Amino acid sequence: MKKHKIIIIGGGASGVFLSLLLKDYGHDVAIIESKDRILKKLLTTGNGRCNISNNSSLAGNPVMYSSHNPNYNYSPLKKYGSSDAEAYFYTLGLPLVTLEEGKMYPRSLQASSVVDIMRMSLMEKGVSVYLEEKVKSVYHESNFTVETESSSFGCEILVIASGGASMPSTGSDGSMYKVIRNLGINVLAPVPVLVQLKLDYPNIKALSGIKFDGYGTLYDGLEKIQTEFGEFLFTDYGISGPPILQLSRFAGPLLADGRKLTISLDLLPEMEQSTVRDMIAERLALFGSRSALDLLKGVINSKMISTLLKESGADKPSSASMAIDYSCFSRLASIMKDWRFAITGTQGFNMAQGTYGGVDTNELTDFLESRKIPNLYFTGEVIDVIGACGGYNLQWAWSSAHSVLEDIEMKNLTKK
Image (cartoon, rainbow, N blue to C red; front, top):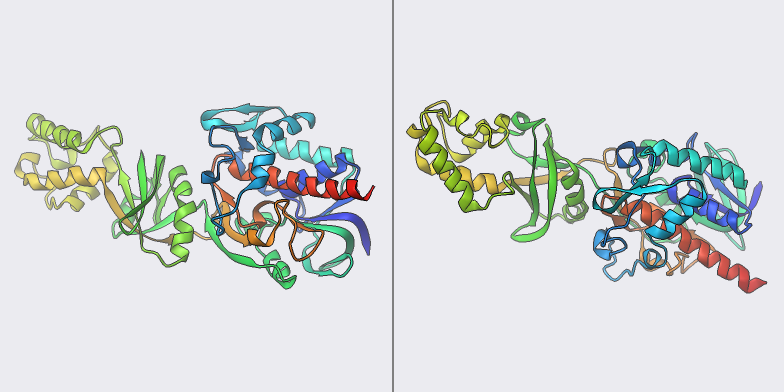
């Protein structure tokens, strides 16, 4: 049996960050990782640039995070913020830069730089790393025993930083949920979020590949849930793009609860409804001899005009615009400001960037220690906390890791 004072299950962002912090305080710490390399998921973040954190006015604000627990206080984020993480990364040799919307990146704008520097720091600080060791079970008596497919490990303090269920190819495949439940810890059912949405629309394949900038508003029945702006992309199954990933943080849990959701798309965000009607009337007056298919060219993506005309009831779109009943153009004006689609689901965990669900926050102290089992901690995405896109989830990884360090150090000082 291999023994260490502290073992961290999971060589992802939060687990590696915690191991570096612990080594700074002289702790004997080891990482157990199921894959052949650590930090595989980190390489994919921020479109390969690694959006490390966010220092906008919303940084640390609970509105940027979701949990099953409406009363969760997100205390780790209050105690250790983006400026703290930035300062620590600087000590590792990684300067950060802030770009649009407060998004923070490595100065190199390369996720590989972050991975390389964190790996180098592990070696320099002497953190033990065991690769290709998939955990099968954990036992607790006075200490912890961790059994993998090929080895056995013992420790006084165990930290589970195994991630959620999103992007399973990187190692966070949700397999640790069963191990955690076997310890008597409540794990809330995982739901894929920060993910594309499936739509119920007969002409969806005709729209596939079309991009546009606009607003998307999520509705639960008549209730408006959330609005996001940005670039949308129609796909052969539904819709994608940064605003959709943001909206899915709300849509995923609601869909899992069986709610009937719709999304409203505003194709002309810079115009009021009345302005759109006036614009169409003006173009009819000036270019009424043009076909309906040509009337709005230059205004919206020409590839979606045919579908929009069908929606508005124009059954002969190749006819001269002036020959088509004006009521069709009136409906068209409404559709371009409020194009409704029924949402039937999300893509799965293999496409998702995050997980809603995981270890119930009611099971944990403010320092993320189990209330049932002393010296058992959780950190990162394995906990039922998910943030918006934009660096918020990696900040949770750093903040939650630091909370665990704080508690371990406080106990350590008390013993001395």
